[in-house]
Length: 137
Image 1 (tube, rainbow, N blue to C red):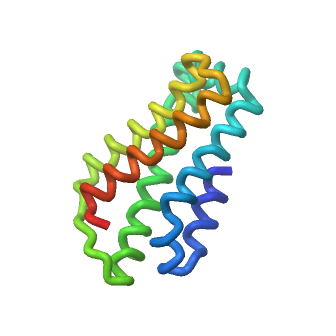
Image 2 (image 1 turned 30 degrees about the horizontal axis):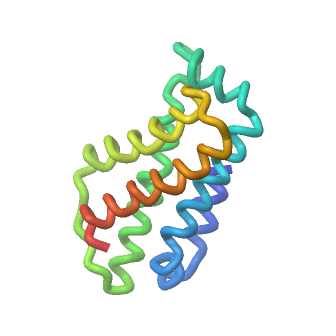
């Protein structure tokens, strides 16, 4: 599901990616939250009880997907003339893993769905603005 969201964004024109990044990012995270809350019990188990299983590093797995998408977006932004600063891969990984860890905290701490939407919107913007500050786009 998250991969489909990333592919949709990648399929947009460079100009539309630049114009719609914030809106699409927030919508994508809310869609992911919809899925997580629709499968709440399963995600609660995965996030709280998956030590030594293939799901124990879910935030890490999601971060790797997002890091690749971010690198692709940086190339796109550069193509349309946006000044983009490179981010050391280790820093990018720490930031991206932090995003997903923060996101999963909503389930771990039993945040009600209605409250989660507000948090997701604000936290996604927080990360987007941070990336803009670091990368310069």
